Image 1 (cartoon, helix red, strand yellow):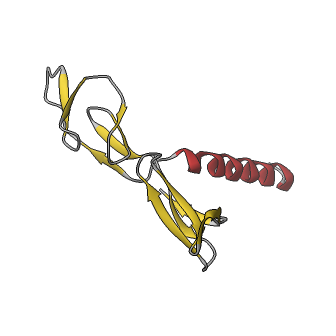
Image 2 (image 1 turned 180 degrees about the vertical axis):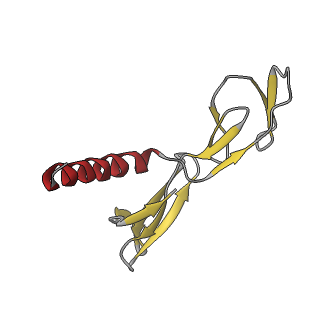
Length: 112
């Protein structure tokens, strides 16, 4: 394999990994499902759900009977004159000016 083909391979791999990174859920909780169970309990909302269903609970977690993963990212880098506030209804952080909540701020980095 020549140098150009090798570089193309590495570049393709880098692009693929960068594309897949935002699709991952870094914060997940795993639960054990009893054999033969037809329903499971969401312990946050104290509600029963059928096996195979999906839901978002009041802690903004995307759940099944075996996993719950965060549906939001946490802003880590934004201007110093801004503040990050979690909107539990929308299940996302909003970053705005400290002295003017109507003015949104840019987010430079965030994590799941």
